[in-house]
Length: 375
Figure 1 (tube, rainbow, N blue to C red):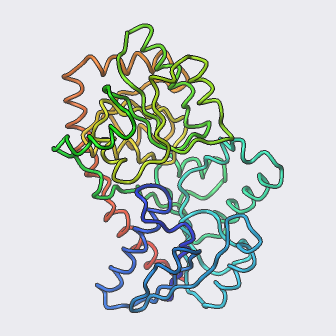
Figure 2 (cartoon, one colour):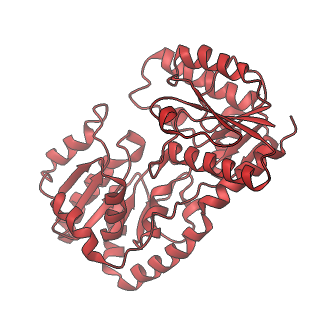
């Protein structure tokens, strides 16, 4: 077969759709080589990834330079797909040219924009474009990959898709997330961000469904009710669409207790996971939720919201809380903070759990599905 892959979000960064695409492409190339090159792979990139990617046997790269939701995506990208005369295309994200009518599969990571559109999708035409594209993707795809049963159920419920069309393939962790015995390796990072106390950690973006305002309010309760002498570290790029997080920090006079490193490097992220006392994941909605697993792989116990995919993915290996109740969140953090036996138990269980989410298993299952589809 001649197989195309949409690599416009391709990235070697640790997390996100870009990293999943990176790992899937790497696996496609490796598996194809092992089997004696039965398939030709055509990869469609934007810059700068197009220039940095090196072609190899039976692997061809095409420059697209088409942003999501753009005219170039819908027309220019479609033309390039048709020109290659592909037997099958894998879109690792729902964004695709709706004019492309030949066989394809699509990976749906979540329905966040359906359930929590946020402040970026306030204009009617943005919302319309999203709904047209995602509904066309699930309707026309030969197969749909959902990253969790929760996402599969959301697709069935909100987009009315035949369950038989959907295959669940869980995301996987990369080997970089690991327990580091030498704690002195963290010193430079802790000094850089002026972290001088034990700390709670959150990693990720600052959108409303991430529930950071309630986390900040819970931290205030910990300070006042339990005399909690910790820092709270919130990584991630500040988002001008969501000023509520910084405003709440200011209103509650927590500027000296909550540390905002911004976007940290990949190496620093692993160090922070390892150095954190507790990882907190307050999200209202996740299609999968890699960060708590990343923290577990680094030997850090987790407090997570009992919502969406979390119970499916994390099972009984975390302390759960009601994501709509900051008092409950504060109580659960305090419970874990004071219970050394529970901390030890969760660390051990967490490091066992992450073995179930292997990046190689994810990519091989995806390759197998792709190459066994009858086109």
